[in-house]
Amino acid sequence: MRIGLVGVGRIGAFHARTLLGLDDVDSLVVADADDAAAQRVAAEIGAEHAGDVDGLLGSGIDGFVIAAATPAHAELLRQGIAAGVPTFCEKPVARTLDETLELARLEAESSTPVHIGFQRRFDAGYQRVRDAIAADELGFVHTIRANTHDQTPPHASYIPTSGGIFRDCNVHDFDAIRFVTGQEVESAYATGGNKGEQFFVDAGDVDSGAALLRLVDGTTCLVSSTRYNGAGHDVRLEAMGSKGTLTAGLDDSLAMRSAEEGVTFPPGPGHATFMDRFQPAYVAELTAFAAVARGETPSPCTVADALQAFRTAEACDRSWREGRVVPLAEVADL
Ligand SMILES: NC(=O)c1ccc[n+]([C@@H]2O[C@H](COP(=O)([O-])OP(=O)(O)OC[C@H]3O[C@@H](n4cnc5c(N)ncnc54)[C@H](O)[C@@H]3O)[C@@H](O)[C@H]2O)c1
Image (cartoon, protein in one colour):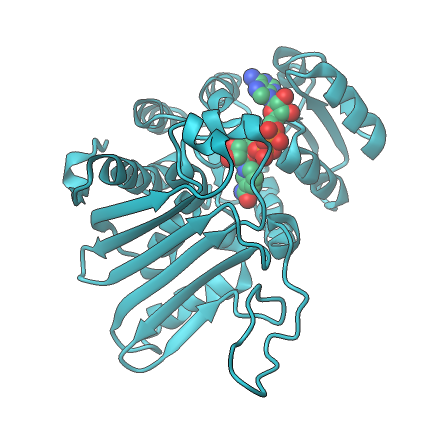
């Protein structure tokens, strides 16, 4: 297969390497608004280069991968869908709820498949939690704890266009909670704070956040995020039930140390970035996208799916700004 990829920043250059390593992919062509960066990455990894997105879409590609910055997603998704090329797009779908709704409608009217990049759906631990809940191994699940704790912040210019910590980071947790429980969110209360660099304050964002969600079936979810987890990249989901508790991400590289005498778990070292924490999941999700692009399987995570995670992020953003519980019913849906 021939794949086109736009956006060769942190995740785009990583996805480009992953794609070239897949048996399914014979050739890769990359583009970026920063053409020099696209040329440099293409030369480094042995990919082709296109000067712009029209050139990329017109170069005979079987699949289109969008890994550009979040504000570019909506227009690039429209272009991919209009060209009829199966499209993978990094989370979040778009920067705003209105754009996300518009793209969900466009997806529904189109026959072009769209796969949104929530890689935790392809992580073995998250899949085991989902399977255990579905098989009633945990009894009734009363509480979920989920977190996205980055070791260090992204570059300062990333933050003002990221959509804020709930849409940028916790949106992964919101999708994962929906994925493992099969439940929708009923209400959200969120808060956050800034103790780190000034650019978070300047962007009207928080560098650490927390949300308390109630699911429609009465499950309570405690969700947290930070850009400053010095111990390492810590991403986990714990499902606690009447018969048992199961945790995704509780591995030997957990970015945490016990205060108890004689306890040596986890042996470490901790994960440093999302790239090393989720490397197998990224391979699995791009392999799945190749199957979607060949028409063998439907999208495993549609814009309509991603819209629901975005609505929760939207509710959390409103909640911390306005200091109140936000019912999901007040956030626009399809
Ligand atoms: N799934 C994950 O684990 C994960 C991890 C990191 C980032 N992301 C998502 O991936 C996207 C990129 O994040 P990043 O950390 O790589 O950002 P980045 O800032 O490192 O890179 C963004 C790249 O997009 C390019 N770009 C911006 N606008 C463009 C346009 N209109 N056309 C073409 N190229 C354009 C920039 O020049 C840059 O090279 C974001 O949407 C982010 O939310 C997902």
